Image 1 (cartoon, rainbow, N blue to C red):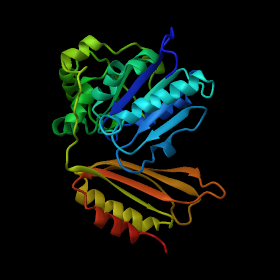
Image 2: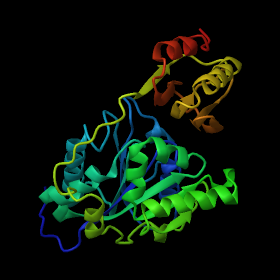
Image 3: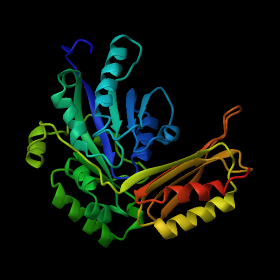
Image 4: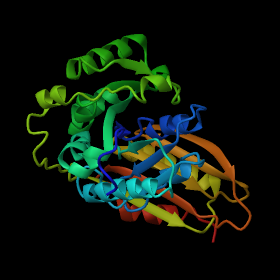
Length: 329
């Protein structure tokens, strides 16, 4: 670790929120904003293969992907290592950044991540935890808060709450949701973030993290926090170099949403569709599916499709076999 006697520590923002809330959309908004800030991004996904790095805007930022576990438990040691390596490269002039954003997996408890900046001396001396920003999916939040402990933890530890998808609910539902959020966390301001549109000044350099307030929520915050996920939640990853037939794939997704929609916490993918020169990007939460055309396939690029499904008790073998039947061989 470089000299820890630096007068100005590097601010760190933890960007969290449940699966499908819109964290990557917000992060893309931050990376594309003309704010003049140089940002290093540490990104974590739940599952053995991630695709969010492919969905991020690639600019001058340093983006480090962690997809071999959840940042709040199995790979927390990797987080310490990566923060140390970023600091060394910055001190040696190999990287130039002024702040760090950590995007957690949607199943992360933010407490162990934040804890890193207080129990790891070198990390705490070089970096400053600026704030925990939690994106809340207004459409599905009440169900998620009722069923998933992690969703409550993400709201409870937030210094700012950003509501996405508010256009999909009624004013009465919005009022009920905001009342529920305030009951969990009365100190965090609530703002709306339609497709990531929000005031950057309200989420970066806000010095929002208050250790005393966190100790009231989690008295053992500075002790060794254990964290386990719902054993029924797992990820299913499918990849292929074969093109998909568009009609067969959409028929497959219709069946998945119909039969497993309540258990599908999150699904996303980048697809090679036969006859289409652009990547097809699809993302969904429960029964809400969106699809868009992405960038064109580059000359010489391997046209590879990768799909990730995260949910409860998913029939992985059936999913793989069904997707195999959607391919054009």
